[in-house]
Length: 424
Ligand SMILES: Cc1cc2nc3c(=O)[nH]c(=O)nc-3n(C[C@H](O)[C@H](O)[C@H](O)COP(=O)(O)OP(=O)(O)OC[C@H]3O[C@@H](n4cnc5c(N)ncnc54)[C@H](O)[C@@H]3O)c2cc1C
Image 1 (cartoon, helix red, strand yellow):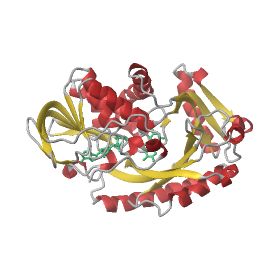
Image 2: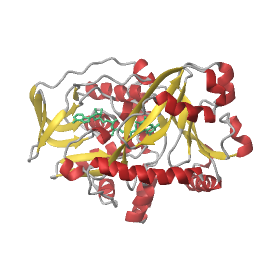
Image 3: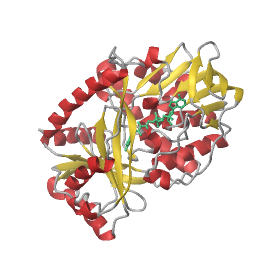
Image 4: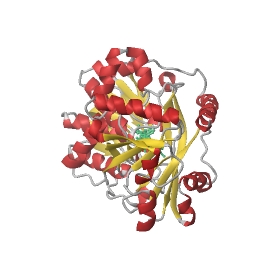
């Protein structure tokens, strides 16, 4: 049974109410994309811009998964860079440099080109709790300065932190005016509208049940099927297709967000004077920002049990109040969660099955920007430019040869290690 968007602040403030039809009967296309999140929709849009006929099959609604539920933090780069460096040396260095800001560029261009209203704002602070974090942030600052971006970054000392965020818990941070935040569901829906405008046929309530491989694979749903030259699997943490090839690499984890009632100007001036996005430097991060209507959207936690907490509010409230005790009397209007796909080496898992079924998943906590980077790399590969795609495909992977739930328990143990490391 297809589901609606989860009851989040984003779903309550959607500005595009298009309902795409459900697939019925057989259709033929160049490329069939499975999954209507950023990976699927962005790939469809890129390929449509390049003249391909594209069909998107989404089990629920466009933006139903992580893409329509996330913190909306637009953060540069991809996760798992260290693994790319260890896998490819100098070649990885060039790749990392070339793609670091590419997702931001794609999103900015599309917002302008297709007039997508998604509350994009610039300003982002990574916060430190200890010297080790500051050392890492200094390295990032030096890297960006060496790229000529010095004027866009600032190392924030402890005494200066309250000019950015009104709390006593941090020892410093790194500010960037190139990163920022946005309304992810409205971005995803806007990109879908742009894709549909270029002829992409989007079907909702059309979960894929099977892919029949061949020179022209057939993608089956309950109501119909799509015969394509190529298929792109973009179901990330939510799909269960192609288990033989894809199991043991990606592990779904839950993360959760609270949205308060709109805050008063007085409180905002004290706790979020610059309306920026904030994410701490821990392994298991807290991330937060204001919405366009001035709610605190406070996210965090990472669970591997496959079960949501009994009360998201009770789980997240102590985190938010630890950061901002001032918010103790504010009302919580929305609470929700979603699944991210984590790979053990943190590098996105990219490749293809039988030569013509491509997949991309496992952004490991990142995704707003990195899905756009990877969807361009996938689109390049589909059109014959394999260089960057090959670097991802050949990056070292760690496969746990166990069922997903066993792997999740093993990762939960690993995360316990990181939680202890974060604490001390
Ligand atoms: C609560 C939360 C907070 C986050 N915060 C941030 C953040 O602030 N910044 C950031 O960069 N990243 C963040 N992320 C991560 C980011 O949202 C994801 O990495 C990214 O959205 C993944 O996009 P995707 O398109 O690959 O997957 P998804 O958006 O999950 O989309 C997958 C889609 O595939 C569909 N699907 C699955 N199986 C099938 C099937 N069989 N047939 C058809 N369709 C199918 C699903 O219904 C779903 O719509 C967060 C994630 C969550 C959950």
